[in-house]
Length: 346
Image 1 (spheres, rainbow, N blue to C red):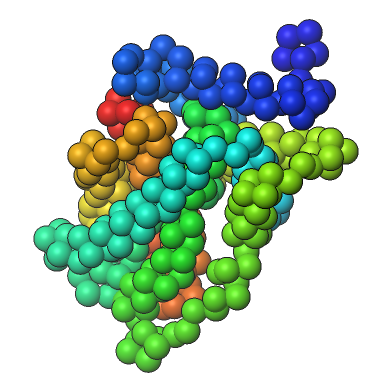
Image 2 (image 1 turned 90 degrees about the vertical axis):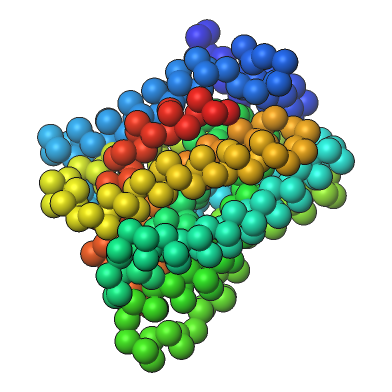
C-alpha cells in the first residue's frame, strides 16, 4: 500500500475502525437499497479473475509444477482459510450481526436441502443416465463455498461478509458428508450405499474448528493480544490470492475439449451456475432480510462453481468420479463469465 500503510501495523482499536471502513466501502456507490454497486462488484471480480489467470499461466509456462496444487491446497484449507475465518469473527458484539448469522445458518440448510431435492427430477429431465445421477445431483447442489466462496466474499464484502459466508457454509459441511455421500454412493454398488460417514473428519476439520473458536471469541468478546493477532492476520491476508492462484493452477491441468463434449457436464453447469443462483435470488428477494449485505453474500456464494470436494466424495463413496472432475473443471472456468452476470442481481 502507498506510504507503507498496512492494517498489520495498527492497534486493535484502529483495526476495528479500519474494518468498519472496509464494510462501508463494500457498500459504497450503492443506491437506497444499500447494496454494492455493479461497478464495484465487477471491478473486484476482475481483480480476482486476474489472479486466477496468474495461476493458470504459471503452470502452463512451467514456473510452477502442477503437483504444487496439493501442498498449496493443504496450506489454504488447513492454515490460511481457518485464520481468515477466525479473524473475521473478531468484531464488537452486535445483536443484529448475531441475528444475521443465525439467518445465514438457516438459509444454508434451506438452499442445500432444497437443491438436493430439486436435482432429482432435474437429473431425469436432462436424461442423465443411471450410474451418473448421484454425482450429477451432488455437483449441482453443492457449490465451492470454502475454496472460492469465502475468499470471494471477503474480497467483495469485507470481514462482515466473510463472517456471514462462513455461517452460510456451516450446513454445507454437515450436508455434503451426509446427503452428499449418499448421492455419490447411489451411483455405485448397492452395498456402497451403506457407507458410513466419518463424522470425526467432518466436525473436527480445521475450518469448523476455526468457526467454533471464532464464534466463542465473538460471543465472549475475548481480546486477542496483538502479538498473536498480527501473525494470524498475516496468514489471513494470504487466503484470497492463494485460493485464486490454486484455482488457476487446477484449470491449467484440464482438457476443456473433452469435458465440453460431455452433455451431462454442460447440464450441470447450466443448473449450478445459472438456474440455482437465479432461484436463490428469487427466494431471498421474497424474504424480509434487513441486511442487504446478507442478500449479496447469499447470491454470490450460491453462484460459485461445483465444490471441489465432490470429487473426493465420489472417490470415497463410489460415485462417478470422471463426471465430478469434469464438472468441477468446466464450472470453475465458466464461472469467470457467469459470476459477473449473477452479480448484476445483487
